[in-house]
Image 1 (cartoon, rainbow, N blue to C red):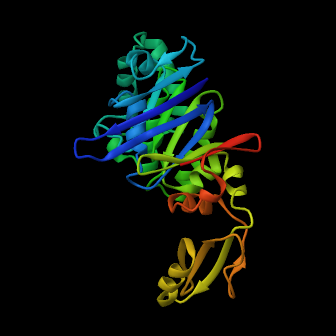
Image 2 (cartoon, one colour; image 1 turned 90 degrees about the horizontal axis):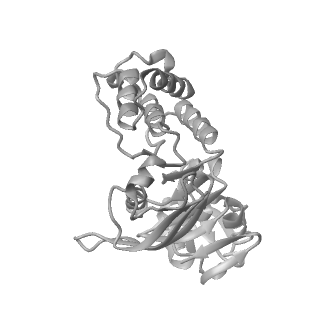
Image 3 (spheres, helix red, strand yellow; image 1 turned 45 degrees about the vertical axis):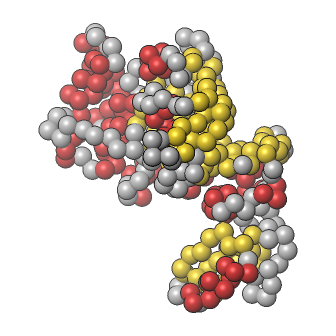
Length: 313
């Protein structure tokens, strides 16, 4: 299966261009969508989940069991193969996980009681919630609620699963447990993971895209994006009072306070000067370079790199 997004645009009534000619091909497996708050990620997720309309563009889900689906026009067909975990997933606090999942299963069209009970129990086991299935959802931790959110998203054997900022606010243990669950379910379906946490995408996704201000800036594999910065990222540490001067002279992609000093990463074809050391680029460097508009040297429009592609805006 593949999800083909072509020229998708959305402008809100206040004039904000939430989506600006977004074009992506998303294959089966985990696909990461990275970007800061306000990048347009949630607007794209809601559009793909049939919760709002785009102004222009097209979206096709090809290779689905029921045939190709026009996502923007045939919303009922999309919903039959869709699992969705929104950024703000609300629950009825006094209802148990088992009863709530049973209710949602009925809404999904699972009318046979014994079959529904078997499916509900299986999903609660898969998300490691079976032992607390009788507990009210209001007493669940943040990580438990997110795992319940995945359980409801998996109802009906979906082929396209959309998760929006799923690990925000989770502690490290719950985040790891959630990562393992996403990898497990992402082997045979399309899982679109929207987040601003670079390490989530680095850990989970064979392919990704970086968005900002409604546009796709770059897309490809993590290795391709990192390779595009090979030999071009330099690091130095300065006093916080000197950061502004460094910004004036160099293309700074990120700064981080570390042991009383500010660690600065800059991008350049040659050494920026004394005190700078070359470093091996990371996906985080690629992310900040893309957001800062410093990837122009390797892409103007569309460019093929290795076996895949990087698209630069």
